[in-house]
Image 1 (cartoon, rainbow, N blue to C red):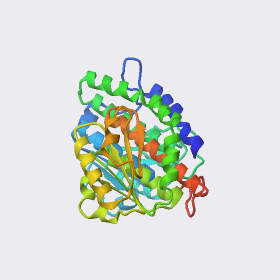
Image 2: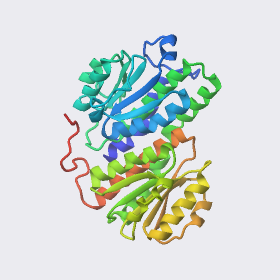
Image 3: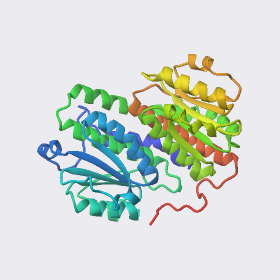
Image 4: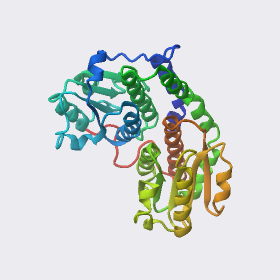
Length: 358
């Protein structure tokens, strides 16, 4: 698992070169006319597990970019209710293997209602890839660990590129596209910096590894990035986790916290910074739980706002939110890895699980 976590800067660098030309234009080989793209009424992502988390992270970004409804559905539930799909809907099916039965059946059900289906997979020979109208290959190389890491960030970048491709055809100003591409190109270097300074993450993992449960909180798309972190901990360390917006956690949920449990809060610079600090302080003071704060590296002042006892800080580079979500995912991957290792579990082969759910 750790080796595959460390591959991510290289894989993302390769994808960035593949998708973005020197003039900031997008190289996304999906044969849709501008008229067809402008006619898309809504987007639905169908996926399971880590792929579902990828869809959730990207969906909030898509909504802001495209100004059309974007929803994310569990593959296993889509066949039971897909009444919202019309002939102008675009359905994106995500599966690392391309062989997940639920996702394949969801794609088949979608194809009965719309001709616009896209498969996002890491396997060009898979049935999902072959059954879809359009395809984007993740090209993250073979992933051996059952707990997905490098395919997650690769899927997320590919999905964001697809969103930018649609935006570029819907007459969004080129200047904003140039800025977005420039920010995404910082990803490999930013992840490298996290990997080079992962000693703090390892120390934090060893401090909280006996937690009987972990509550993850944040705001906006960072909440969905934390969902992937929570899943990694469930898969590799068998710790019960929950993920909520911090404001929602105050409505009863944080009563589960006590001094045997841990609160992980991603508090990043931005409009909601003060609110996130206030909510996290309240939950920490009331519960006495361990606290892990994921923060921007340049923000030193935040450390003075919290009591030092059983409070730990993890730094990520400052960036736009759509880049910071990648950093949060990588931090959580490392946290899960080091917790699992410290507890002596077989990280690459978690109990009961297989790489493909058929």
